[in-house]
Amino acid sequence: MKLTNDNYISLLKLAAFSVAAIVIWRTLKPFSQSLIDGAGVIKDGIDSASGAAGVLLSDVTAAANGNFQPQFTSAAFPLIAKYVESDYTVDRWWRGVIEGAHEGNAELFSEILDVKGRLKPQYHNLIDKEVNAQSINQANEFGYGVGL
Image 1 (cartoon, rainbow, N blue to C red):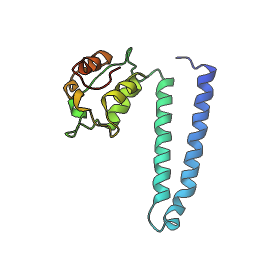
Image 2: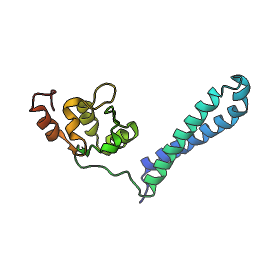
Image 3: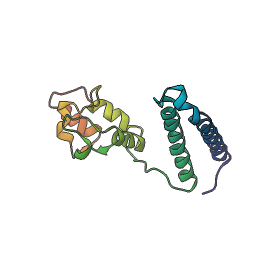
Image 4: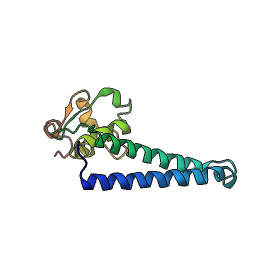
């Protein structure tokens, strides 16, 4: 894969950000214990920020090497039972992966989940089935929800 100028500039910006995050982390790490009396609040914040920068750098590197996250061609996904808790809460990590696979999947989730991230009762029958606009509309034909 050949890098375009825009990709090259984005990669350089990411590298600069990563270096800055590491420098800040290394500078503040020795002082975090004494500043917060052992609470480690600064250390945890710096560790989480540098972790996010590492993930971002990994994603950019993977993209530069030709490895991309799979993208769906339409808004649809299987609602896999192992990612739905006993109280019908959908796993956040899995939801993020599915939403990243197609921009329309976030709209599907907003229709089938309540504000707490739980599957609405009228959509319980979609577990282990494909969720798409048609399956949501079919569930709504029985008098539930608004539909898409």
